[in-house]
Each structure stands twice: as structure tokens, then as C-alpha cells.
Length: 295
Picture 1: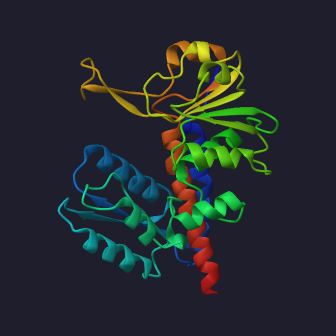
Picture 2: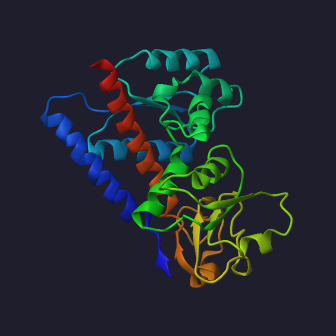
């Protein structure tokens, strides 16, 4: 069993991006610029956004963080997004979710320009991804692809079982892995909470991607010997032995599943770090495209 360590893979990606951005700086060219919007004081959201901003600074991406009180109106937030859309120095925009109940996530997603949608959630980017056209890929699925590539895990001809059909992870990764390209050529089964005989289906899988949001959902009797297991889940579980009062657990029963696998991601320290690396890569690619358009 080998750990698919997000720290190792993401560090390699970040180092490559850092060198490319350093080259831009030495040539006097504009550096990539990411704008992040945080609404309210949710501790988890603050942690995620601060981590994204910190990672930007580490590799030379300019970042601007816009904080708003939870009471901000939907109209005001949408106006801010439109303002950022129109700022030529901004290459990427992300709005941290969840948002307060009075703000429509759908309206916010649609308000972000597809050319600056580095989270890859806009329907234009989703549609282009489905059609195999150039697009910004949602950061978590993109991060999974980058991890598989870094560790040279073959997907061609493999049977991949994806557990979870969310719009931002399960559905897009199932499409991407079935595509006729270097990341794909797999046969993909997309499972969910209504799937019958889930255990039998999973035991056929060469690669399992668990993204169902249920702690320790994937157990050892669902995994065949030498399978690859990618755990996307990040679940907060009460744990009085921890200073924070909780522990982070994935969707996989790691302790019992790991011995059966050839490769497995830890939680934390796995897919989460790759999601941030993918976001940084999308931001760099957005800046590159905007630079070419301005020539």
C-alpha cells in the first residue's frame, strides 16, 4: 500500500507554477490575480479561503480577499461580482460557499464570468467540459486527475466506480475519466445513495472514488485487493481527545481499507491539497488566456 500524498503532488505542481510565474515577473509581465469573496464568519470557510490566499502568495499569484458581513444583500454581492468581472487586472474569481440562505448560489455562479470562473462551476465551463472543449475544470475533479497523473496511475481500460453524483465532484469526474484523453479512457460507473448492490459494484472496481459525504462509508468488504482508493470526503467528527473537539474523517474507513489497496489517499492530506493546486493552475491558465487576448 502506498499513500497518495497530496502534499507531495501539490508541492510539485506549485513549484512548477512558481517557476512560470517567476519567469513572468522577470520579463516584466502581469502576474496572475485571484479575487476571493468571503461572506460571513463561518470558521471552515475562513480556513479554506485563508489557505487559498496563502498558497497564492507562496507561488507569486496576486490575491485580493473581499470580506462581507453575513447581512450583505444578494444585490450588493452580485454587483461586486460584476465589478470584478469588469476589472482587467483580475484573472480569476471565486466565491466561498456556503452562502447565507438569503443569497442564491445559483445566481452567484451565473454572475461570474466564465472566463474568470476558476472554480469551474459556471454552466458554460461545465458544458464545455462535457463536450470536450477547452474549459476550466472544477477544482476537485481536476485535482484528482492531477494526482493520478503525478503518481502515474493508469486509468485506460480500468473500471472506475464513483460514489456520489454531486455537480462539483462526482458527476464531472465520472465524465472526465471516461473521455478519450490522457486522463481518461476508463469505464466509469457512477453510483449514489439509491444504487442497488453497491457493495458488489464496488468490488469490481480497479479505482474507487468516494465523494458521498458520509464518514467511513466505504468499508473493507467493498474493496477488492490492490484497488486504488481516492477519498474526497472531509467530515468533521466529534473527538474529545482533540484540542479542536473534532477530527477529520473521510468517506473511507481508512484503517481497515488501506491494507487491501495498492494506493489510497489519506484524510486530511490528500485530495484537499490537490483541490487548491488545481485552483492555482486554473488561475494561471486564466491569466495566460487573458494575456493572449490582450496582445
